[in-house]
Each structure stands twice: as C-alpha cells, then as structure tokens.
Length: 563
Figure 1 (cartoon, one colour):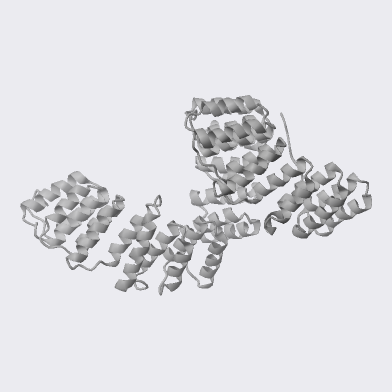
Figure 2 (figure 1 turned 90 degrees about the horizontal axis):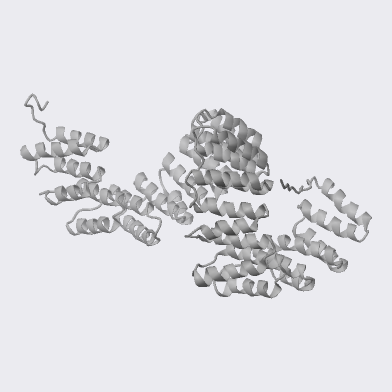
C-alpha cells in the first residue's frame, strides 16, 4: 500500500498501531508514527489515542506520555490507555495522579479506568497500603454508580480483595452482582482456595452445578487445587470423574494437578497411573510423584523414581532435591544422602537455602550432627527456616544447651525475630534434654517478648518436658489450662509418662480425659491399653483393644528404618 503511494487514513493507522501492539513491534510502530506525523494526523484524537495505546502496550511509557501530552484533544479512552500503562508497570502513584488530573479537567472515569487501577493494586501484594487505596477506589466506584452494572469492574474489585486475602469483602461484591460470568465464579473460587478455605470453593462449585453454569479449565484448576488442600479421597475421585466427563483431562497442567491431588490424598496407585499417562513429564510431574512416595513413608520408591528422573533430560529443581533428601532422612541412608549432596553441588545448588536446610535435616536424622552443623555453618545468609532446622537437630540429639545457645545467637547477635516454628524446635530441644527451667522460661518469653500465641505443638512440648522430669501433676494442671481443642495432643505424652513413672492413679485420670476429648482416635485407646498392661490389668487392656475393633478404627502403625 505504501509503495503504491496510497496513504492510510484515520481508520487505517489505528488498525496498524493495534497490530504493532499485539506483536510488540516497536520498530514498525515508530516507523508508522513517522508516517502519521508527516501526514498531519497529530490533531486526530482517534489516531493519537491508538498511538498512545501502542506505546503503552509495548512498555515504552516515555513515548506514550509524550504523545499524550501533545494531544490537542483527549478522550476517556486516551486517558485509560496511559493509566493502564502505568498500572501495568506498577507505577501506581503516576496512575493515581493521572486520574486526579483527569477529574480536574472534567473527564469522568469509566469502568475501564478502574479495572486498570484495581488490576495494578492486585499485582502489588507486597504492600497493604495498596489494599487501603483499593478500598478507597471501591468507595469512589460506588459514588459514581458503577458497581453492579459493569461485570468486568465487579470482577476486578472481587479479584483485588481475593488477591489480598480479604474474602469477606470479595464475597460481598460477588453476592451483590446482578450478573455473574464464569470469570466471576472462578475468581471467587480461586480466592477461597488461595486462603485455604477450600470447603467454600467446593460449595461454590456445587452451586454452579445447580445453576447449570458451564465449566471451564480454570474452574477445574481451582477445584482440583481445593481437593489438594482438603485431602479427601472420595471428593478427589468425584472431581476426577468430572474432569474426564468435561474433557479437560488431556491438559498436562490438569494431569499434574490430579497427580498431586491423589498423592496428597495418599492414593499413590491412582497418582502413579496419571504420572505414567503424562507423555511430556515436567519437573513438576516428577517432583509431585516423588513427594507422594516420600510423604507416604515410601522413601525407597521415592529414591528409585529420582534415579529414573536424573537419567532423563528433565533436571531436578530445589523442591525435588529437598524432597529426596527428606526421603533419605526417613530411610536413614547416609550414603545416599551424601550422593545427593554431591549431585546438588555439581548442579549449582550449593548455596540454595531450601536444599541446605534439607541437608541439615537429613544429616541430623541420619545421626551425623557434626555434618549437619558443618552444612549450617557454611551458609552465609541464613534464613529463619535454616536456623529452626539446626535448633531442631540439636534437640533430636539431646543437645539442649547447644540449641539454646544457637537460639540466643540468632535473636541477639543476628537480630532475627523467631516465629512459632522456631519456638517449637527450641521447646522440643528443652524437653528432650530435661531443661525444665529453660523450657518454662522460653514458653513464657514467646508470648511476652514476641507476641506469639502458643499452638498445640508448643503446649505438647511443654507437657512432654514436665512429664519427662516427673512433674506429672503440674503437667496435668498445664493441660487443663489449655484450650480444649489442643488437649488431646498433650494428654498422650502425659499418659505415656504416667506409665513410665508408675503413677497409675493419675494415669487412669489422664486416660479418662483423653478418651473424652479424643474418642475416635485409635492411638488414645492403644495408650490406655498400654497403661493397663504395664500394671497387669489384662482384662481392662483387652477391653480397650476390643473397643478399637468395635468402633471400626484402625491401629496406627509405627514405621522406622535405618540403613
């Protein structure tokens, strides 16, 4: 067209600029910009707006702003193009400044204006300041009367709240929507899954089914992700059937999710079938299957699969290596662990914190605390997880004083603020070394010095500490002061301590409390049976064991192996 000396018009150039934007072709865009300039289209709002949009989508913000500033007349679309560009580049202050300027000049923002702004807030999750600004923008939207009339705007509002984990606010937007699209449903479902409220996501899915709303790929991604959290075998199988019925099972991403879902539910047979069906296995496919074996206490299969993986073109990532190191720890295989450490070093993971933390755990579980300390010391920039792992390692080996010393170094010399997990490791170390005064001191300090609310793990460690040194009555008093929902976890170690210390009278009292708060746990009945066995009350012990069968419970088996 150009070689034929036929010039474009006000309709031709916007189409060409749109093509350049889609192709992200700046050279062609700037060439066309030159043609537009020579042909005198500088005053044409339609052409200039498309030029702003082209530069914006190609992330050449300076050029977009220059064209915008030189426009003799602007439309709302012109403003929206530049605002969208600023939001896409996370330049939220400039985007807000542009909206203020827009209002001063008498332009009324459209739904597209706010969609861009809200999307910008959603992609800046590192600051809750953006959440407050987003809420202010929500108020402005209501003032302009745009809510409930623009589906895309409502979806963006809901998406922003969901991204920040504010699901109550997101649900209010969803419930007030006059019209809901499939995007509306997937956004609210995805939000619930993200914050761990997968039960709500499943309820929404059931509601979709009742309303005969069509299902798409994203719906199943959210639904399967929810099943991964819930770990319910029956639900997982039902969801898999729906995936097959709707024909989404051929997507590798869905296969990987289904694989993870079955692995998390403990159904390794189904997980392995799906794994074998994946033609183009990714690192995620391999890692999910390896993790399934490792977490189900089948470390040998996990390591066998890892050996197969390293023989393929797929390279393990840090999650893969952390998982197989965990399998080595469970297997008690020091020699295989050393081989994996060598592999990690040869493949560039010598400074990776996740891998180094897993090495500390592996060496500790395999009995080599000196090697665990060596790995810990060589890491220059230690994170909280690594400190916690080393403190826990000292605890496993009964080195309570070393654990305390390391904790003090972390909090005092390194000025690292501990979290609940670190305190669990520290209290565990105090318990296993019989350091009752230190344990009580740190249990108190976690609340007074760092504002950490004790969890069932902390209470259990505290009770175990008191029970180990024979303070059984104090341990029971401590349990009775706990929240009811955590008492069962703490009563079990106290029951064992009563048996060990020969305090049968208190043991029977603890047993009664344990069966009262945890009537469906087979381990509770086994613990009580062991107590009766220890003093020759065979009839009572048999009664407890018969109750396990009578209630349809399965005895939980222990598992250990050292190579």
